Image (tube, rainbow over all chains, first blue to last red; front, side):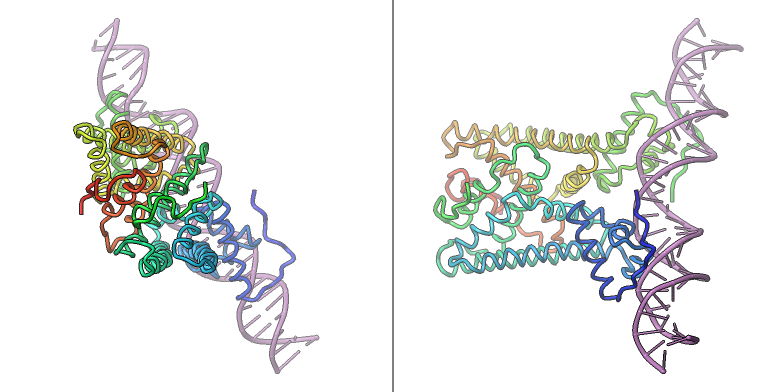
Length: 209
Length: 209
DNA sequence: ACTAGTATTGATCATACGATCAACAAGAGG
DNA sequence: CCTCTTGTTGATCGTATGATCAATACTAGT
C-alpha cells in the first residue's frame, strides 16, 4: 500500500523540498480533496518520510490551508487574465460566468466545499477561505462597478451583488458535484437571474447554451 | 472527559434504543456537525457503551446518513407546511426565500456542507443527499409550475429554475457561514435575481429588507 | 421462582491521524 | 581527505476512529 522512501537518498535544498511538499499538497488536494492532504499522504507523494514533512511543515493545518490558497489563488489569476482581455463589463461578467460554470472545474469545487467544512476545525484554513472569498469578491465587484459606471448595469450595491453572484456560482457548482447524472445547463438560467439583478435586458449576458 | 455509562442499568426495548440513538445522532449533527456523529460520540450522548451503538447500527455511515436525512426532511416538511398556507405562487416563493435565508438555520447549512464533503467517501450519505435534493427540488418546482400555470411567472423550464433557485440558496447560506462578520442581507438581492429568471416585476417577491 | 432470551457491557483489534526525537548520513567547506 | 552542518530517517507516542466478541445481567415468559 505505502511506497517506502527511496534508499538511494538525494539530499535536496530546503527551498526545493519546501516547494516539492507544497506541490504535493496541492496535487493531492486537486486529485483527492483537501482531506487527502495528510502527513503520510504528502510524504508518500514526495517519496519521503512523514517525519520530514513534519520537519518542514510544523503544522498540517497550515499546509492544508496553503494548498487551498494556492489552488484558489491560481484560479482567480486565471479568470482575471481571461477577463482582462474583454472590452465591456457585460462581456467580462458573461465570460466569468461561462468559465466558472462550464463544469470542468469540479476538482476546485471539491476543494471549496471541503474548505467550508474543514474550516470549522482548522482556523488557518478558515482564514484562507475568508481571504480568498474576499479576493474573488473584489474581482466581481470590480466588474460590476465598471458596469455601473459605464451605465451598462443598473444597480447600486456593487459589493452586495458581487457576493450574491459568487454565492450563486458556488451553490450551483456544489450542487452539480452531487447531481452526477443530469449535468444540465448550469449557466443559462443563472445568466437571466443576474440580468435581473443588474437591470439588464434578457439575454444580455449571453450565457452559453 | 468521557462520561462512563451508568451503573444502574435500565434495559430498554430495541425500538426505544433505536429511537434514542437516532435522536442522539440527529442532535449531535445539529450541534456539532455530521463529523461529530461518531460511534463514541453517540454512545456518550445516549450514555451507553460504543459497542451498543455498533450493535444497533451495524454501519456508522448509515447512521450519519440517517441523521442527515432526518434533519433535512424535517426542514422540508416545515417549509412545505408554512408555504401551503399562502395563496399565490409568488407569495409562496417569497416566503420560501425569506425562511431559508433568514440566517437562523446555520446549523442545517453546516449539515448540508458537511454532507457534500463527506458524501464523497460515504455512499449511503451521498444517496441521501441526492434524495433530499430531489425532494427540495420537487417542492420548488411545484411552486414554479403553479406560478407558470397561473400566469404569474413567465418561464418554461420549471425543473431547471427550481435547481437554480436551490443552488443559489445553498450557495448564499454556505457563504454566509464563513463570512462571519458582515451577515449582510442574504435575501434582498436574490429576490431580484429570481424575479429576473421568472420574468417578474422588480420587487414582486418582496424579499424582506 | 426459575429459566431462557437478549440487551448490554468490557476488552480488544486494526487502522489512520499528527507529532516528536535521537540517531544517521550526505555534501559542502576547510 | 577529513569535519561539521543539517537534511533525513526510523521508531515511537498519543489520540481518534470503526468494528468484533465473549461474557454479563436484566427481564419477560412460563
